[in-house]
Length: 378
Image (cartoon, rainbow, N blue to C red; front, side):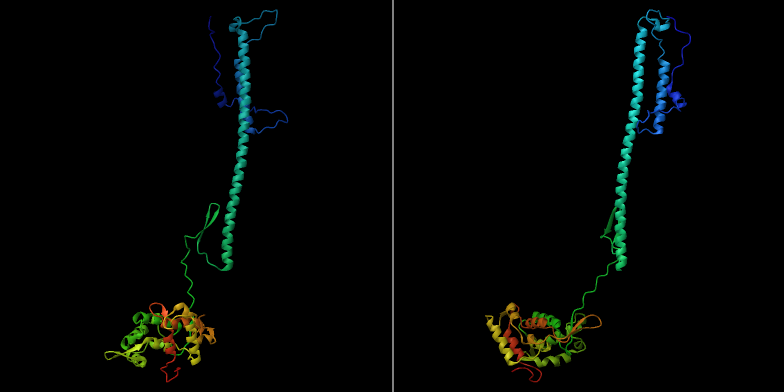
């Protein structure tokens, strides 16, 4: 078979697409047909359909079947017996595939548009929720600052917006926090040289550790009082004691000496000294009798009572009216006399032994004596 001298140019759909030969023929929808296709999608589908139509017009060129009872004037390959029928089958199959290609392209694009719409809706919901959460964080920040401004309080901690969360960073400080000053301890207004209840308790504990039995050398006691007065910051003694020289302290304390001596040095009972400096109200004989009777009623010896039992015995000064109190210019509470509860505890400390028991008998005996010209109860 002879090959024709000229053949048709090859069909290159890609070059034709690049050259925009298929442009300008958008895909047309049926009337009242709903679709998610955009204008750009219709243009793309129109170019696809135009390319398929071009390929169909170029490739499907077999002649028609001759009319029944006539002989067809068929040339070329179509003249081969049975070949025309095969060409027609192939052309029908090509047209069916081309139509399916257009339909599938439309389905893919519409599905993509639906997914795009769903994605946009989800993004809008997420962005809306994110925006609302961030606004809540900003609102909380503004509220905190507004509250601080209205109350006049300072912002102690750093405020942060962590994405949508309002955070008060308690691990950081905007400035050093100055602790509030400790409340001033109540002060007792007493006669000169008399010790307050706090001073009585501190001095009793110091002397108890130095001389548990009560007897101490005069020179040792002079040294203790001189050192206590020198420690002005601890306020173990009133201010009147600070300028006293050891000679003046010795002259003051020698009147409390007992009959005991160590060599030529007299001994002093520090419990009698502390009792005298406590400025206790003088008891009557009846009050002391009632005190002893109450102590004996607790059971046991009055010379070695448990501290709890001794604290339950009512002292004569507890029945007195409590001292007046007032506030000074610094806001400190000032009592015009001893605080009764603290005074009782300090007096018991004076007569408490190292084993924790209290000698009530010694307390009564010292209450019966006085170094001020017979002012006590005999």
